[in-house]
Length: 281
Image (cartoon, rainbow, N blue to C red; front, side, top):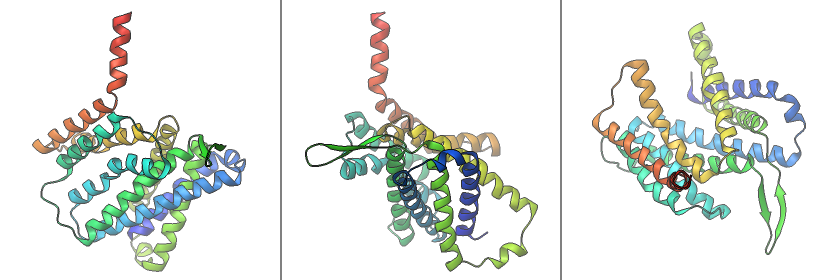
């Protein structure tokens, strides 16, 4: 399938599924909540489109994967710059450590700036912004004036937020696909196998994944959540080993270890508190 058409199909199907499940909840949202979810979906759609364009540019997947993963590094900086969100020192300390770990996981050679790499960097910026906006939409947050808080922004329930976001991505990417891609070959090459992969991608890799992520973001701050998301390439390596019999190379093993160190750093204060409580008891 053409890449944008595939993205549109999986996100629309996933969005429709969650919309049916949470129709009553979605129906009760106010306009401000709808607007937040649509903005989140629009930002995420932009990131997905730049990511696909980067893949089609010919840049190696290892380099593209590292550049896309920069989203977890720049997210706290963007939250601080645009929304003045405070972040503990351990968060900033863990960012370069996480970046080094991702580098060991993804890079086999040096980076030379190319058009495709710039597309991946742009995608990582939008993914970082999506993570921040998604967290803010899923939580109550203060809207301030010059000297005082004007109002408390009402959060969007995780199920409704995910459903509207996914439908928005599907509609926007589908519109781009209609203008830029040929659809005739899809009908000619249609098969049950193709349909199966589209449905699995829509319901497991999109609906389930993003609902779980959004629900988790409603329970944690973006500064902590964004570092926890760094473990995604570790899960990829473990599942690849279990599914395809792949083994970690030396660099990949080092990368997994460094990423784990980053998680220890960001949770260090919590670990110290646990030790203090055990000593007191």
